[in-house]
Length: 268
Image 1: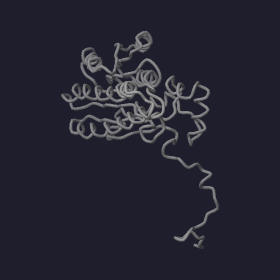
Image 2: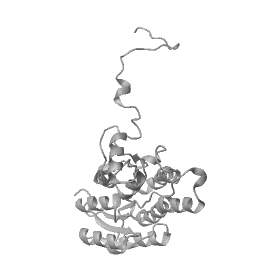
Image 3: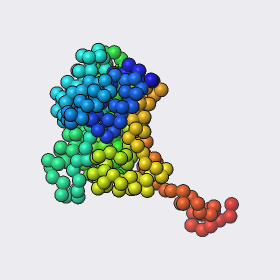
Image 4: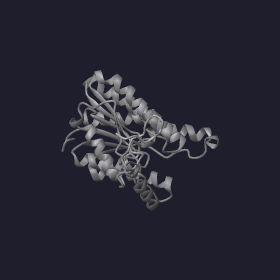
């Protein structure tokens, strides 16, 4: 119950990583206010978890502001904001992506994070404490996704770091989580179906395993808890080594030797 009593807002909460995070936070004692454009699924989840739900289109600043206001009205404060709403967005060759598709993708993946940070900061500054978390992606650390998605997720990391620098003096921590290939409806669309997605993820991840949504939720729970009291401006990538471990063990299994400046083997 390390999140006991922590008032938490989660966007994109009715499915995928948002739903998994809502369930994890509920198990750990958080008081939840959930937002999503899928009203039926959101209401059902909120009813199951004993949470609040609001219809929220994260591309509209007024909707995000209202979601934060609901948390403050019902619980008197906001302890944690999780900017999670997302979509795959525009896919295709750079010369074929339409202007509208590009801007719509960035509105969901980047503008929404800005709105969440803005209104969470307004709610948290007077109390001098709080945690703002955002969902980036392994594609925010390396070119591992469509162009618009990759650009937006890189931008989320940059925004996380700059806002963390501003809000540190107010006692507000700001961090991001960068998942790799996690089986959700969105990632399954990128691979065609769930089976293909899981097979590809297991093959690509150096640890040889598929990262599950609840494991990503665990990273959010850690960052929201007092266990992470000294962590701000950081990006945690629970991606089974996808970004950082590009060379597998076979590369290092060659016979030990030493090459000099001329490329010749030399005894040592």
